Image (cartoon, rainbow, N blue to C red):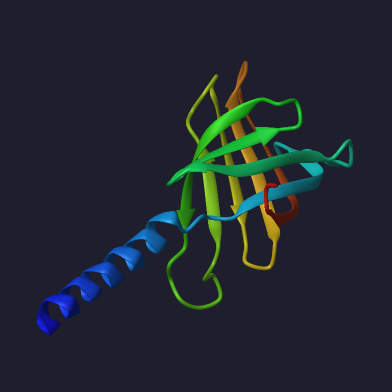
Length: 136
């Protein structure tokens, strides 16, 4: 009887651990980018670019811009130890000839870029900051 109880307890512990791993949630972010630099020309300090990155379910994330346009994104986390540990990147699928890349470093600094083709190829890049956001 004791041997059976030990097996049941071990199985229960394994299931509990597995459940914790499965429900671990990535962090959601609110990001603000103050300046936008267009294709080698000067940078503009226009209205800040704001976006949010939310996890919708396991391994699925959505980036939403201020105008409420939302794009599914793929999350890539740097697993190498050292100075880059904790860096995360989010990339959209190619949509309407445009792809977006958001990189968030462990200290909250962030980069945003978009590459498009509209009567020729164009790109823009921004530096900003992302903060961890806990949805209510």
